[in-house]
Amino acid sequence: MDKVRDKGAIITALGAMSGTSLDGVDAAVLQTDGVTIHGFGAHDYRGYSADEQKTLRAALGQWTGPALDPANDVVMDAHEALLSGFEGVDLVGFHGQTVAHAPRMQGTLQLGDGAALAQSLGLPVVWDFRSADVELGGEGAPLAPFFHFACAKWIGAEAPVAFLNLGGVGNLTWVDPAAERPEDEGALLAFDTGPANAPLNDLMQARLGVPFDDGGRIASSGTVETGALELFLAEPYFARMPPKSLDRNDFAEMVGLVSELSDADAAATLTAMCAAGVAEAMQHCPRVPSQVLVTGGGRHNPVLMRMLEVSLDCPVNAVEHVGLDGDMLEAQAFAYLAVRVARGLPTSCPGTTRVRAAVGGGTVSYP
Image 1: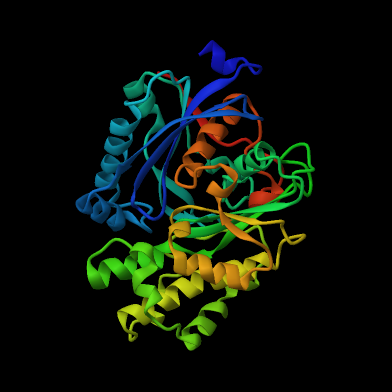
Image 2: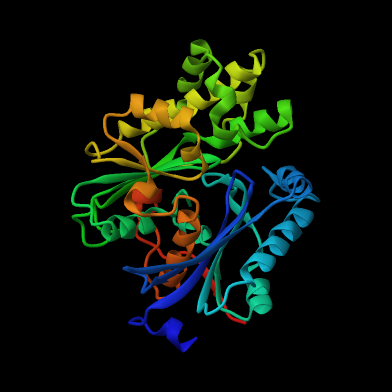
């Protein structure tokens, strides 16, 4: 614990992320002092079973009520089982599971008890990353951009670069690596681009009983319904200036727009909606980035990646192109943020969440 409090020490931090795709929990080790990435360590994944996913889906959009307790149990059991398998860890960053997000109304809600996890693991746990940002007028999301800034430094980027995370919701981080710190004015612009995998995954589950369009095979045989795409792009969200954020279910009506289409046409149209949201988002970038680096499950969908390549004015690559791990980047981000929280460093700023001033979120619980 003394090592965690020593601001000059390199910490071995374990980050965990359970995203809005509801596929499972990612966990990854990162060596960092909270500023610079010093190395990447072991990682692992624990998928949610079909029954566990059903329990989690029942809690989506709920702020109170009977659905939350069983969903919380799923989150805690999965994280304890996965995180207990790591050794040599100094600190844990525990994001929990977002089930409701409305920063300008009720706030933001992540399931999971970091204090209980600290007792179970016998390690300091940093958690509740988003609440402080929301309380200071921020969106509470996205939170990975400060880590993306460190990644841009790690890959030696000399020109602006964008990180595009395609999970349940899409989010974009534009990084100027010439800045010294992520909280410096102009260093970062970050915001949610729109829905990504969540509507397509929901459609696949409802129609075909499969969790996602594996390899984009279903969408590849379909035709995009341009009328539905135009209705999607007319949503007021796209006219809002960033930073801005979304809840997983904010575009739930997308599935309704394709309800009368065949499976293949519906999948193609939902995939095109994700790409179109990203193309709209890119117009807000201060300058065209040298490349867009894609992370999250969406990068495994070749149909989606081709759509992005056609619609964007710069190269589009999976983050593996620069030596990063797109399956673990979000988990690594919360390892990085955990060290920043423990050391009193900010984790968000006006350019990433619209918070009034740079703020360090999170609570540290000790065993």
